[in-house]
Amino acid sequence: MGLILVVEDDDDLSTMLASAIENRGHEVRVATNGREALDRVAERMPDLILLDIMMPVMSGAEFVARFREHYGRAALIVVMTAAESAELRAHEIGADGWLSKPFELGKLANVLATYASPSPHARAGG
Image (cartoon, rainbow, N blue to C red):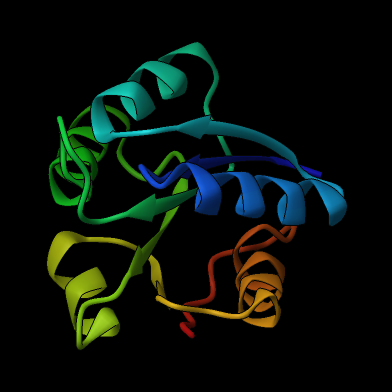
């Protein structure tokens, strides 16, 4: 299947996410902030980006703005946030979907099925 970029500054969460995603047959790369994520994207464009919003160095919102400016819609972006209205926050920054923190692995599986499938352009959230 495709390449998924996990952008998360919490090492335990990013490790758990990477493991769960690999167990579902996807290749995974990890970045700890938005700037590092832009470097990963420049190396190889992922099919899906799972993006934390609150990070040091470069926030998720700033990452989305820079990514869209340089790459348009070359990859789908799903934000992972503990914000009260994850759907609204995702819409505000131009993401394709959202995953509310904390979440169970079943919700992650739903996001992967929706956004990392061969035709992942349907909008959904969790």
